[in-house]
Image: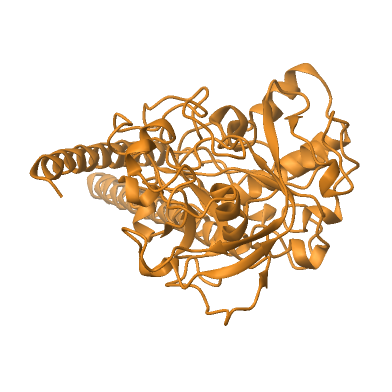
Length: 455
């Protein structure tokens, strides 16, 4: 690495550190101010987000229970309504698949979906690929089924319809919800963020960032409810298959990182922030920003490498997450060097991605420090059954544990507040007794004095 690059990177990291301390201080001030004014923050709302941008506390009465029919917990395939009609969106075979534009009914949001025909490919990087990491191998032959994939990364315009409840608030002023809306309104939503999650980098037309994998999954679930079409995150295999677009080189445009200038945003050309989606050239299958801009969530647990396949064909692989960290993102970002944007490059999530989160327990919705992480959606041609879909959807146990932990925190706060009132009441009562005793004693002295005078 050159001296110039080292200096630039050091200066960049220093700015990021000061930004982090600033945001942490802002968050702490908000939490303290909220506590001092005695305002009870809103809970983990299902229908609408809290109005105040403070750390969230729950309404424990809304916590899910065993056997719940809450659509946030039941796979979407079990309750989805008939798909809203959209031109070109329906197909019964790969040959009938076409590009289409999805419309989120009741909003101005639209986004494009690109058909990705199923096939086989070599997943991972060859041992001689430059800048290869150990977790990219060994290579294995993989088959994936047909699906549609988002032409672009999910933008704030799309994400905040769910994440900030914009769809719900707009409808409250304009019309009554239809059956699709009622389902969508029942899907769990994040509490309001403690700070502007764009961090001043831009919103309209820019990719949404800083969400956890669970939040990205829940957005897909909400989208399924709104449209009647089954959306989810891609598996790691689906993502790499779509990124490579039939190529076997380090990038979808070849092996030369110098050409990345035309295809992706990375540390050297991004001006130290994410950029609007779709401003670079697409890959051979018409997908934009597969190299860089923001790293993208996939469904898999991140592993130290792939299981050797022994030359056998592996169909639709998925490493179902068993632990919260690390989970996998792909594609690299605006904050990465070119080698991290290669088609086979992988990265695992880290606890430090939530370092600035002031909440206790820390939010399941936001990675406050992951300003380089977003996602895009896929829609499989074959809708899975409920057992299969459960592997793709938000973990019910994680959602329940978080809500229970929030409930315990809120209850503890209530007990402390009640204890304070009781202590104060005890002091006041004691003060009353002492005052009463003083009056009685004074009265006794005065009566005694009168008796002595009369004698």
